[in-house]
Amino acid sequence: MVWMWRFEKADGAETAPAIEPEEFATQGDAEAWIGEVWKELLDGGAERVKLFEDGTQIYVMSLSAAAEA
Image (cartoon, rainbow, N blue to C red; front, side):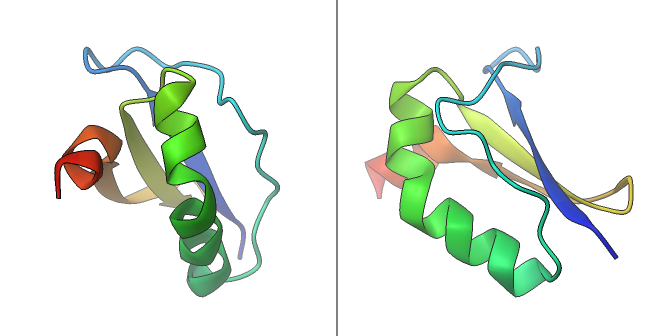
């Protein structure tokens, strides 16, 4: 299994991340990485992320909502 992130602007357009991720072997590894770098990604223009497992979307998360919390 391969876990990957997709980075988007608020309108859903894909954007290049400020920090280039790797492919992750587990969901936990992918989530740990996003937990460490989400502020930098948001500052770089990504407003939401989508997590995919082998090409299947698992969930969408707003980075801007995390900043408001």
